[in-house]
Figure (spheres, rainbow, N blue to C red):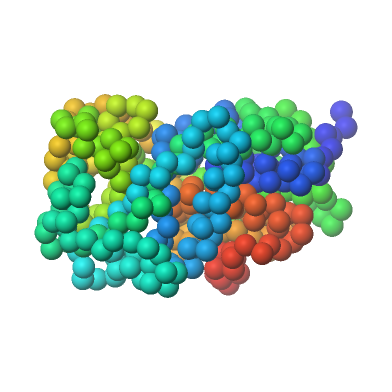
Length: 378
């Protein structure tokens, strides 16, 4: 059988790949998106109902212009989708005031980009949002534009929009290999062969196996999320509880109000430090996972620490410096890479998709992605 021909193949149709497929299709490109699991699915990094979005970027102020454009594109997607995707419930970055952690980084980003915010003590934070119970000497940045994205809904909305512009998305089709030369790319799957001008790889934790020369920069990590039923549910509703990131002696945690399923949702960055090939990481949460999340919740959100409602695993794919890889492949100018989002990428999916489409079609983009070039590791 002759190969299926198209302009661009997108490998991996999760948060980033679905956005890339949409932006490519909207520009009139004949796109095929290939996903080895379902669309959406719960095996990678784009599930679990909610993902934080926040304007202060404590990781690095350089992310702020990118997230501002991401907000605009999420609002555009929301306007065409029947179900709300972006929920502005506010965001809180809380930590001790000394050191260079979440609070100091958030303040730095606010100062660098003139972001309106409230600077609160731990006591003031608890007075304003009664679900919070941090020590009085902690400090917090509260920013009203923060909130969360319905992550599976975002993937579905991008795929639906891609379909409307003529894209073909194929689930349960695993890529087995690919070749590239100056004439184009060939992608081999367990169902078909595709011949295209360009290839976009957004395969999450599986990117390293598809791009072996970059595998040393991409470390999959097991992550676990917990949902606990509050004893005072009204304090953890979307009307009364902003999302948070917290630096505490127990680690670096994040959480959400109750939304759609029972329970206050909480996670710990780099949960238990368990890394390895994505197909070998344990998919089943255990009592140690649960205890780690519960102990944090009981200390800082005591009225959220009721019965366990749900536990779920997902994956981070970490780079050595915690920043993204967004670039043209160093050995193949017709292959584009979006990977290594290191546990803080989903909020950017809307703009990452646009940047990847630019790179695939033009070899360059006006989006501010220079800090995320692969060459920084040379």
